[in-house]
Length: 143
Image (cartoon, rainbow, N blue to C red):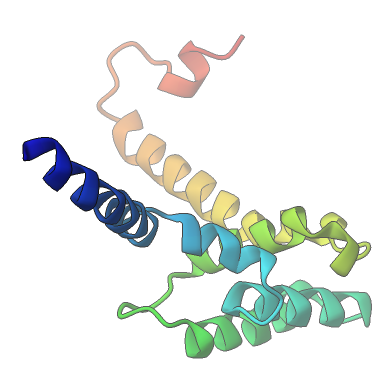
């Protein structure tokens, strides 16, 4: 009796478990970058088209980020860092749809790198007066 019950219930349980796992896992977000009608795909299209048309990074980024913020189906606001990653994923996963766009992807991260460098310099400047050894951390480990 137990075997016959298990034989009837197991196929439904397997399908339900697989469906639940697909919904809970990050698979839909990975596929979103492949989909040109997704927020990531549209943002990448806008950014790459504008850059290929001769616009600078700032204008292209503002347009693409505004589109991603408005098109995202997320409950929370999309951060600029996440939007940059979304554009990068869409371009890398589908380079044929975004010809010559790879050379612009570094510009998406240049401002973040500059901000990080500036914060590091500020930390070094404030901690430099209390540094007993005379060498900052970056100087100490610079090889």
